Length: 396
Image 1 (spheres, rainbow, N blue to C red):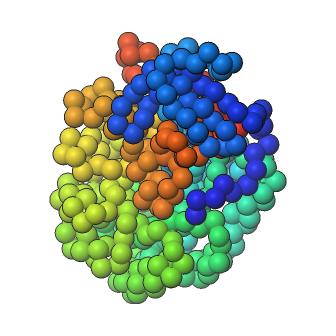
Image 2 (cartoon, rainbow, N blue to C red):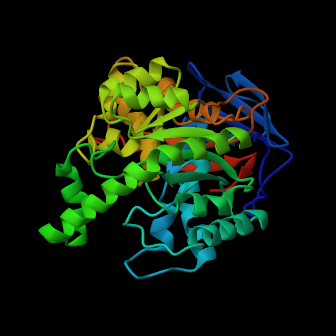
C-alpha cells in the first residue's frame, strides 16, 4: 500500500527542491532548519540555513502532509442539495481541491455500503462515484493521494450486495463496521435518535415508532452475521478494519475478537480507554476539538487527549479542521506540544493503515510536506496554509 498512486497534473516539480529558513516539525521536536527533497523523497534534514539556492519559508512551519482516514465530505460535493446530483468528475475535482488546500496529501474517501434509511443513493451509485475518482486519479487530475474507506452499515439488508461491487477494488484500504440502529452504539438512547431521524425526516409519532421498530428488527437480523462476514473478507484482502461508535466494554471485546485496528469515534471514555489499551488507534473528530465538544453530545475528544488515549484525528465533515485542531490542542493542553499533536494527523494515521513511507519529515520518507503560517496571537489559533507538496510536486 506504500506506492504513489496516480500522477499529479499540478507539477512545478524539479529534480531537487530545497526548503530553508523553516520551523521544521519532526516527529519529536521542532528545529529551525532546511529540508532537501530529491526525486519525490526527503534526502536531507539539517539545522540552520543553506547557502545553495532554496525556497525561503520565511520562518513558517514545514510539516508532514496530513493523512485523513475518515471523511464523507465528497458526498457534499456530489449531492450538494436535496435532489441535486452534480457531475461526477467535477464533484471529485472540487472535493480534491478542498482536501489538498487543507494540507491533506493522503485521504481515505468514505463510500457508504448499505442503506441506513437516510442516504437516498441508488444501487450502483457509490460504484460510479468511485470509478470517477479512479479515472481522475489515473489521468493526473487530482492533487492528493486518494484511497477508499468503505463505511459498512452492518444492520442493512443490502450491505453485502453493495460491498460486492468493491471486493476486488485495489484502492480500498480501510473499512468500518457501523450500526446506526436505535439502541446501538451512537444511539443507545432514543433522545438523540429523535433529533437525528424524527425531526430531520419530519415523521409523526406513529411513523417514527414504525421506523424505529423496523431498524431495530433489521439490526437484530443482520448486524452480527454481517460484521463477521465483512471482517473475514477484509482480513483476507489485507484491508484495515475499524469499529465505529463503540460505547461499552462488550463492544471493545467484540472489536478485539474481530481484529480491529482502528476505534472510530468511541462514545464513552470507558470504551476509548479499553480500545487504546488493547492496542487499537483511537480516532476522534477534529471538529470536536475545535468546537470544544461533540455535536451529538457524546464524549469530548479533548478529554481523551488529556487522558493520553487519543491517537488519531479525522476531519470528518470539515477538511480544514484537521490542521486547525492540532494548534488548538497544542494551545490548550500542557501535555501535548505541536509535534505530538501533528503526529495524530500524520504518522499515527499512516501507520494505522500500513502506510510506512509517509507521515513524518525524515530521510527516506515521501516528500509530502506543507508550509504553514501560524500567528500565536490569533484568538482562534487558525493557521494559514501557504504551500502543499505531494511526492515533491507542488499541488497547492
